[in-house]
Image (cartoon, rainbow, N blue to C red; front, side, top):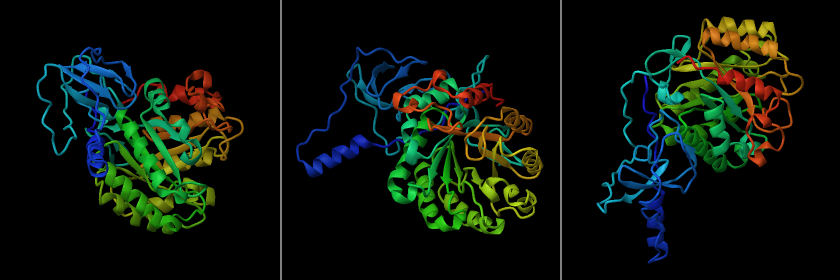
Length: 425
């Protein structure tokens, strides 16, 4: 079944500029694109740069952002005002009437004889928790696979149109995890800047029909309650801004540690309602004890969560592993937990727990085999050109804008091959 991708919230920046010009500089004329009726016709499968002009169904349009009109997505200029500005009609007729709500209504399309699922969001729509799994809007249990960014305070240069086009079009990734560190030069140093980065990345992923995990990357201190007020502010801003989208997933505590499950649970039960107040349908991912190992790294196991779950619906619990450090005992814990509670692997690597050193592909494959069997979604750490072996790109790749296979480290080639395998949607 092919479903047109989700509607995209549109910022009417031109109108705001016009109002500002009239109020501050009388007589200022805000530049606008002229209708170019000799521009080439829009074509599915073509890559467009911001500023490119096309014609479509008797009108002229200008691209507002660089993107690729992937076949099956329905990203024609008339249907995607977040990607295209309507410059006017070519027959001299009036422009369409403005509307108070420029957000288009998503329009399902009938399945053809050879259905193309299109993008992950087009194929699955709004996700929800079903039993111990993750289901699409039709109630089918699915598995998402994708990549995590590194901390955006260090590697924002690796998240751009070219890199996301590579993940969407070449890697066939379903999801990208946006990692906003709280400390270590992250959110607490400039909340507005880091929140704006999350807004921008969500919009870029939405334009590509991918799911976005908003990762509140608390690490040290390990008690998530230390940053509770920051978290309230952050998640209020993000959920309020993106509540109309069906591709946003919230991860509210990256790796709690050094505190009890009851302490972590208390945090979750305070922050989930903050998100629900603005985005009631989104899936929320909950960090577990001991660096999201279900307590394993601090001498416990999954039973503490299974026997005392968070009092909230439509939530999943997170598990992190690094194959060279976390062997069979951790794998067994994940396997048992997945039979009892909804699990999502929001971070893993093929290296040691510091994200560096030699790759243990054999152990990592055992985890991914289990995840495939039990349809546990996963995200790999990390899509950056950090020097450590856990970063998939070679140093200097992001500055050079080079994201092809020639720029991938050994772990990058390995994980790309596993993300590229066909989705079972």
